[in-house]
Amino acid sequence: MVISIKIKKLVGGLLMIWMVGLFGACANIIPPDGGARDSLPPRLIAAVPKDSATNILPKLITLNFDEYINLQNVNENLIVSPTIKSNPLVDYKLRTVTVKIKDSLDPNTTYSLNFGNAIRDVNESNVLKNFTYVFSTGKTIDSFSYKGKVLLAESGKADSTLIVILHKNLADTAISKERPRYYTRISGKGDFIFKTLSPGSYRAFVLPNDFTKKYDDSIKLFAFKSGVLTVSANTSVDTLYAYQEFKLKEKPVKPAVVLDKTGKIDNRLKYQTNLESGQQDILSTLQLAFNRRIQLADSAKIVLYDTNYNKISGYSIQLDTAKTKVVIQYPWKELNYFRLVIPKNALSDTGGISLNKSDTLRFNTKKESEYGSIKIRFTNIQLAKHPVLQFFVSDKLVESIPLTSFEVNRKLFIPGSYELRILYDTNQNGVWDTGSFWKQKKQPEIVQLIQQALNVKGNWDNEVTINL
Image 1 (tube, helix red, strand yellow):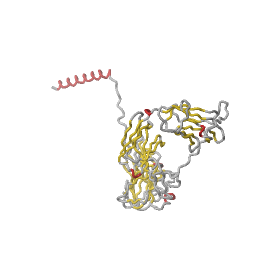
Image 2 (cartoon, rainbow, N blue to C red; image 1 turned 135 degrees about the vertical axis):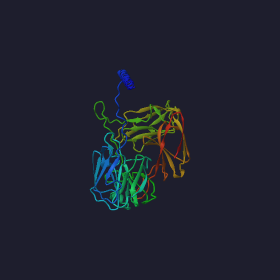
Image 3 (cartoon, rainbow, N blue to C red; image 1 turned 60 degrees about the vertical axis):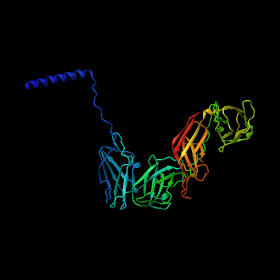
Image 4 (cartoon, rainbow, N blue to C red; image 1 turned 180 degrees about the vertical axis):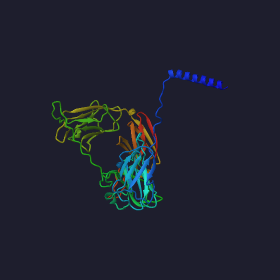
């Protein structure tokens, strides 16, 4: 019986060797891969003093993680709340981060160290987002919070470069003279949150995350909460609207020096039109844009004709406010053909230089079928707030329509993709108005961004319903 078993084992072994040889001769040997990519961020496994410790005045904090870590831009990322005069000295080695606190700490105060996106693992750079270490110099950890959203008043968009600031000093001048008591970042969606706040009264502001963190220049983006913020078990949830009270005026761009074929400066007066391949948009004006400021000697000399040179009536010609464009206003109809005659002495630049010669523009208007119709229905819109529907292309306002009903209809609209916004026009002047903190304590007018873009197709009835 024993011999029989050994023979069976021998035969089985020889068979296995034969099969390995057979398949091994014709198969590719694939080495094992490295396994799934590590997608997990580092994890804190120990802290000295321990996280959320009370009754401590630490000078050195040691944080140990479960894998090798790296610190990136820690000085820009680290937020110590409440703020202290000197930033802590932060260093790292292998799996350990050390924090040396140089300043004395306030008694009976909860401190938090938020590292933002500074901590990440070495191999895959997985970020430990907003890792926060907390301790208290008193007996308890404060657990009150304040959250909300920050939006740009003029566009309704978020700006993650801004920060929200809290001051314990309730005087208006605190925001321009003092270091903030607390501050926190804003997410890409505009959300913010403060945690571990002590209860009490604060003033809330929004500013760029610059070195000063003070409202010392009225061209800075800025927002303020009207009245005092009370941090308690029922702290309000707020939306703050940032604005620039004054904007930097763009310096006029000096015209580039152009040389003619001989290498001499070309002082000729030139213009370009807004015609598209010789076609006039029937919804807009015809514009002649000159290479420098001009003066219109006699607008009557510029004449609009049909193709038989019969003079057309009902049009107007004027200069724009910058005095660089001649604007021709006319109720254009589809598929009409025109001639615009511009005598050389009809206009000149401020130095008296006129066109080199008289010119005649030949153009025709577009077909109505090149446009689309639009029907936009609104639900939940508050007409009592005087809403104005704004159409933007690449952040440029191209159309504004005051809303007096829940529906907008246009038979002809230029095809394209439009960003839509609602301006709540408080003073009904048709434009967005900024806020004022120092003089009037006036909040800016609010613009609501509509997340749904409007895509207008030519020769198409474009209908959309927008629920605000």
